[in-house]
Image 1 (cartoon, helix red, strand yellow):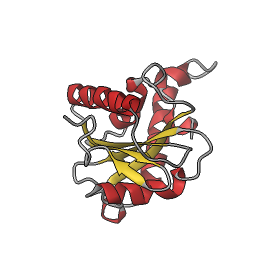
Image 2 (image 1 turned 60 degrees about the vertical axis):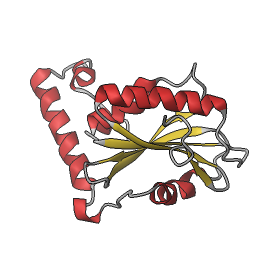
Image 3 (image 1 turned 30 degrees about the vertical axis):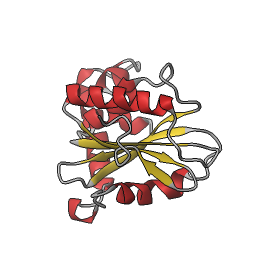
Length: 168
């Protein structure tokens, strides 16, 4: 996965790879990534929090530690990709908002759904979850990337948007 996301500048740091070769390699990697994606009409659509939860619950419900994932969506709310962004404790001091949006900018995605799990299996959002959500929404507005929801995953899920938590 790391090679697919390498930048031209990173490639040029490798001995023997110049600007032209790095450009060609980046193009090949992008072509490979695009060829691996299903056609747009076969990608799932996220029209509701339940749709997002159905994609994320199987991969996040039983995780031993907290993780933050992002669903990247196109202009028609079809899934472009799902990325794991963080592993470990999530709080306002450890969450770098830029890291949440980096894959959305690279995709490019029109919208995102953010989700994180509670290993305790209790999906109740904490006050810190609400604070982080507000920061994510503000950054999304600046970047012109819509934050559709923030799900908290446990034995089930909570849509912070449906509960108006952080989505003031």
